[in-house]
Length: 324
Image 1 (cartoon, rainbow, N blue to C red):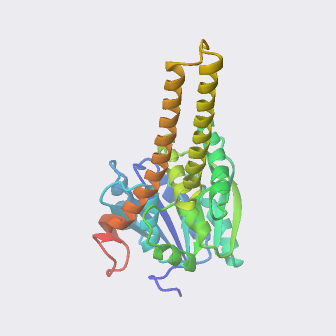
Image 2 (tube, rainbow, N blue to C red):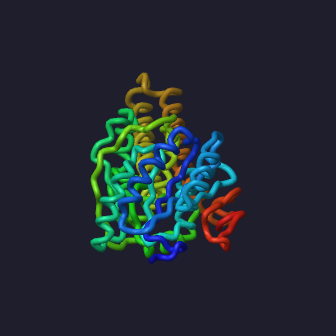
Image 3 (cartoon, rainbow, N blue to C red):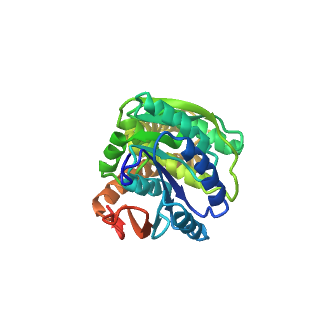
């Protein structure tokens, strides 16, 4: 019999204003946990919800001692909420998934089957995502392929945070000190034996979409900056191209001055275009540098990744106020 403090499986799910989903999520997870070949704990992470999500999680914990939960003191964001769950998950295999039921809980059985064959990271790869808006689908398609070209490691395309990771992999992730966390990238970076399980993404069960285009764009920028230095080199190349264009403009202005003094291309318009072009290049380069410098600043501040306002279902010696 496996001790309660070390279950076979931990299912980590971050929730933010998901009160309409909690009951159905738990119902489907119950059926999955009954079919898993071992003991299971359900780790629910309330990411500073403003609705009754935390209240409903408390009720689940009181009714089922397999349900553990922690409530962040404010909304820290999806990736930090997942990190908090990974920090406290105790299973030999840890599954991370979203709460909106676009990630079908039943796929956990397939992930677990691959883990039992010896794989240490099994990620779910989306082969169909019709429920999403066309703009989001196009952005996701382009982003994953750009990231794959730019990143220092090979990050699988069309994959999210829905995956199963072996205890050894989770321990390595938890030991990483970085603060701007892109879980699917870190998961690829650590290595180990990895494989995929394809699936068709379902529609959101209820409630509003939490990952807006703006948040998706921010996550995409974070992924590129966290796993590639190509943008820094790109700013250098843009500067060289701008310098070449500026030199060409000088030659053209000299030519027009001596050979075509009445050309409409000379004068204020030419100068204004050149100034705006060089200014745009400078701002782009400064912006790229700012992204990297901002991350250096955040890494050196030494603040905790998150703070906890409430925790239940874990061992008594677990922290209750914060986690580094």
